[in-house]
Amino acid sequence: MVHKWLIDVYARDGHGGRRRVPSKLWDDLTLRYPVEPLSSVHELDCIFGRSETATLTRQGVRFKYIQYTSDELVDLLREPAFLKSLPGPRQVTFRFDAGDLSEIKVYLPHVDRYLTVPCGAYWRDDVAGVSVWEHQAAIDYTNHVLKMEVDRDALARARTALFEHNGLSFGPRSEGIGRYALAGESTETEPKRRPRRSPAPSSHEQTPTNVVALDPGRARQRKRTVTPIAAPRTRLIRGVIEMED
Image 1 (cartoon, rainbow, N blue to C red):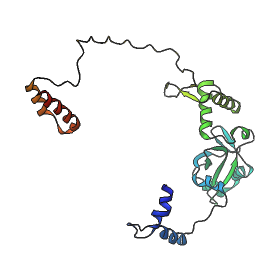
Image 2: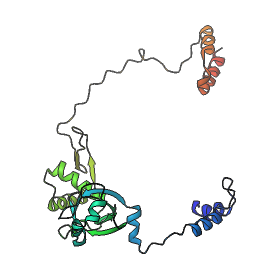
Image 3: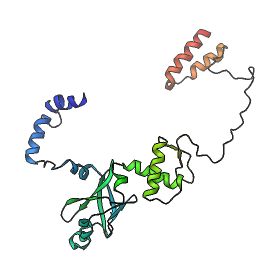
Image 4: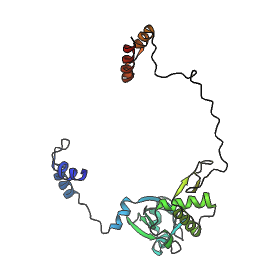
């Protein structure tokens, strides 16, 4: 409904600010500043993908324990123009699809384009189609539950456990680090003792609430002290007072 209103109504009606019809203004500006069509849908990752930086080594780029490499990327270490254009010593900027960690797009500033770099063969079967959130959950589970060194085998074991138990239960924090447990299991090391409750007061000791005094003098005094801020409550109290009077 909103989409139809934007396209069929708003874009074809006069705009008070610009004093132009938005659709006509769009056509004029696209003629003045042509929009280059994308050659492939994969280029959307270069525009809308998440951006990160990493250090480029002879092994490629390492991101969240995953190694990304290609011959073309490593050969750039011998390109003076490329190294000079980087923001820092061997610091490269890349973008990636948050829903699939199988490849990244490394930006080459000296030629103003992106280079697609796949993950290494060692990781290929484990991260294809895996989102950054799933991968991070497996890393956290490996660190805090399995207490193992993070590698491909440990992450695979963590993902299997997470899927078999249908998600994570987030427990209380310990020293600033979130603790994780399998769904249905507790993260408590010792059961908490419930604090003792004070005995409920007897019926003659309980203080009634929302009770207006029956004494006319006190009622009139309370009526005068009501402020306009609590208008709904004022009307309620006034009605009760008038009934008591």
